[in-house]
Length: 161
Image 1 (tube, one colour):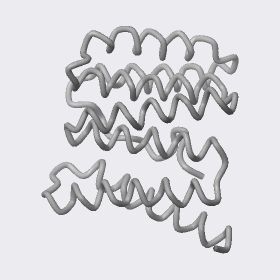
Image 2: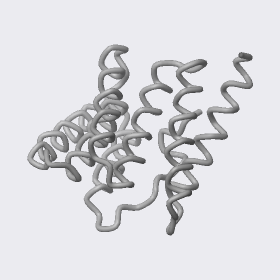
Image 3: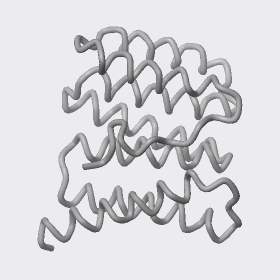
Image 4: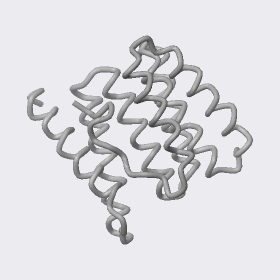
């Protein structure tokens, strides 16, 4: 497959999934489209992207499953994102955000006690980010998970590109 077509497909599918993720009211069909779009985007990134794209795709899938109250699937994809970050030496922000989605998934699962550990790990890694603007943005994103009625994702923050 042509790399440009692959990348454009990955971006388009991520955009569709993000719009559905942030949609205030979704019906069952929307939820299935959200799952399929998130997985399809991640699949295209796995074909033509870097480990960074793959880790972000797994992280987004985890967030989707958490939003849909499917914590078992969310935990699997969050752990996969962390593994990809660690195996590829991705920077602290990527790993911190992956631990954040793991904490979010744990919050929804029978593994609730793990939430505190994962959240602490996410914040510790965020605190190690050298660039102050990036550190603040990452920490803000992690702390947003504590807000009631979690805010929607912002496409500009560590977006798929």
